[in-house]
Length: 377
Image (cartoon, rainbow, N blue to C red; front, top):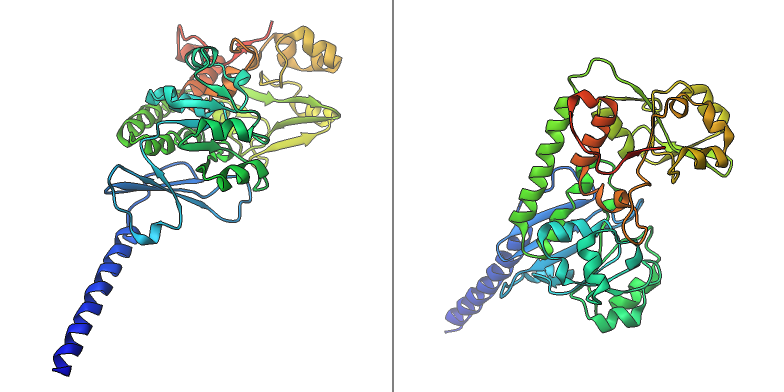
């Protein structure tokens, strides 16, 4: 009798042990990350839920953030309950960066946005209409969100970005029971890597297939344009940036902007410099190296030659200034002054690339209309 009782107890223990192991295996079984280009984002698709890992929410972040997107009636493994669990699809969202707007609009879910940090910076006509009608409330600034407003909005999630991990307002909102999701799209240095963050939104809205298709179309358009630019035999030289206080700030050779120049069939003068941020150089050094550049792309916030001349008469010493081959992304703005480039360009690198190809090699895209850049007058 005792022997039978022992066998029964062991059988029960084995049964529960197997259930626990299977449960854990479901969460940890090898599933391929579906992200191709983004360095700070990982997406794993399971039956009934997705796991999103944001590995680079800000430069130098010590630990990744893991989010579980649970579909309706799905049962999660116990091993995942330690992470932030978000029920999808979202019905209400508070966003904090204009780069989030295009993803929402491309997925057709901009109506779920009920709060935004700094509504005056939004350029999109579609989202501006929602703001003007009162359907999207201003939630303050990203670093100092209005906690009372956000809590009252009761969003399913807050799509946040952070320059480091010291934002006390976001901690307060988390303590209030709200889901804070960090978006690190701004840390990406690959043009297609930035655009791929639409898949994060796809997971939040149960639109994985739609977000995949949107990104695949952008990827194809980018690669097709890149192939077109490879046909050129002569590459014009390009300079960028402008003076800030006593130093000239310009893109480093491994930066987002520098990659665009290369893919557009141009020779960036500082292409060999290391780093993905900005170089800070004295005026004399820039003049010595770039005075005979063919093009000047992105001269800070300047929108006319007269502005540049007034700010620094020495700008007139550069060849692109003399030949009127200076192009700026600061001219095209939304109704309330937000720059369309800042909002849309990270999500549509294919259009940025086509703009630059047309500027450098107009014969490759006859009849093309610039989307972001405009020649200074």
